[in-house]
Image (cartoon, rainbow, N blue to C red):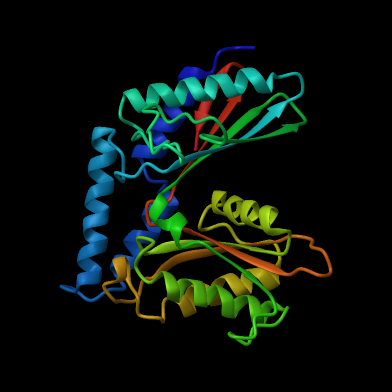
Length: 290
């Protein structure tokens, strides 16, 4: 199996230093929604200046380069063990080159490993075997601030009057956005999973964040709810960084998972404006990035 350490290192560099085009487009559109001279517009304009400088200088978009979360779809016959070793080697190199900040801290000793590796799940790598000969690796860098304001609800929720239906889902998602205020580095993106168990629901909510903002949900019911949640979240007046304004959420992505009859979980993974995700495709001995 070919050593992909260098192509994976480039994937990490791109993810950390170059905001995806669809996210930048959404932020630029949001600027025009805010009043000239307002704190909200100023915050968004500062964000865009930061994005341009980061791209130009290959420096991290945010000082918190987050948890590296890899989703690897590999052809039959490839070695998961070798792929993991190459990913970890690329993470170490990326840390040395300052594309990643040393973020892996032992929870018992408070000691930072200094290289973004940990004993388990740091970095986090999900593997899935697929048909064909093409390897794809999606990388998401999930910052701590937005991770802190993620939430999970169990329906029905009597305090919010939320039942086990899409109307109830709407109520708890908006409650999560309201509680987050500006602490998740708004404007944010909402990844929502309906159903599953507690673990799979969190996993599913993060996976939705791999989608482009301009991708339409294939289920018209969820597509309508995504649009409504984005519009209503932006009516809360929280605004960029909590300064007030019309842009609290840039978009919403929802998935539905099967569940046990006794459980109805709704999980919200909040992504900050620094929506860092990229894909590497390896085919015919060459890498491409999107």
